[in-house]
Length: 217
Image 1 (cartoon, rainbow, N blue to C red):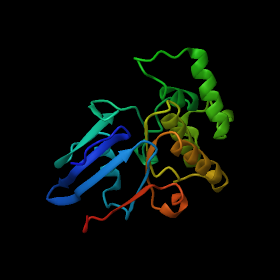
Image 2: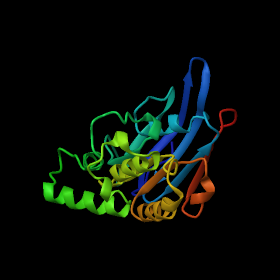
Image 3: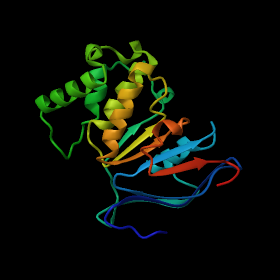
Image 4: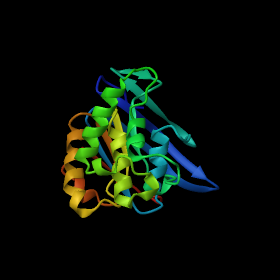
């Protein structure tokens, strides 16, 4: 396993994943440093989302390990913002756009006043063109509107690591340049891991590009 330094925040070492005798990931090694922009690409069903879920420690790899670091020392926790794929969200849940974004600031160990929450949420909703939809139920949103809402939730807490699973899916073409600018801003402040089937759109931001192939890893 590579040795961490003060800029290292995560290391995946020898990560493999098998399910029902099918190899999904094989021997993935990845070091993520502060302000890295890691692009993960590959065909549909190649294991990109599985890799993300292992990084987030939502599932255990069949072999290998995931470790987080702070100033060169291993830590059990890491502030992470996560944008899942839209189709993994139950939009029937009775919650508004404003409430979804506000939930990204929930941290029992770090008190934030209601006025601070309201200010940060309002600013981000305005930037993403969602201010008029703040009280709208998420079940009433278009695919692009929901995607922007989930993106706002992922970034509002200013995490050390931002993990985005297909953030450009469903986004209206009119908002694509603004989303790109937002990703560039995030990349200057924190590490970003982004799954996309359109890596050319963020090639200028990428510090690492990983192509997931179920046949050759």
